[in-house]
Amino acid sequence: MDIINAIIKKTLSITGAAAPDQNLPEVFKAEAKRAVKFVEQGFKGYKMHSAVPGKIDDPSDQTIDTVTEVRKAVGDKIDILVDVNGAYSVHHAIEVGKKLQDLGVFHFEEPRPHYD
Image (cartoon, rainbow, N blue to C red; front, side, top):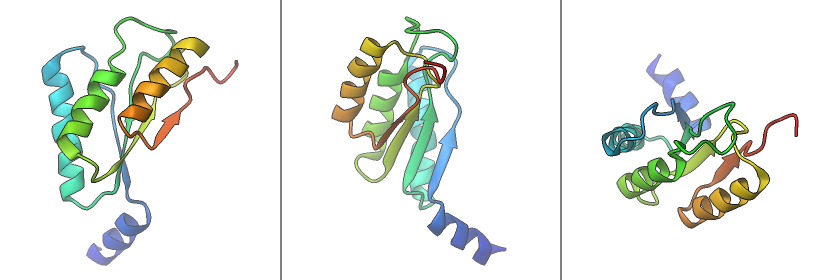
């Protein structure tokens, strides 16, 4: 089984994480610690779901804060992928996308609702 896990890890080296449900610094730090653990296991990418699905431009969105903490914790060791589940207006998606680019995010998934 270890051989199979090693092959899978080498082939599919991205893991996912659930979105934090509170807008608190300790939640961001917990997400960063989780990302560090995956880096230590050899993963090359970390996908996170953030924003508030179903609520366009929700003011409680914590995407930038969370990605900032994760990037601080892992440096440039991994790719960060962010999926916001269609939670942004066009203008906000562009604004957030630029900030994510500055943070070195590899992939910004579904900034707009799928029906738009």
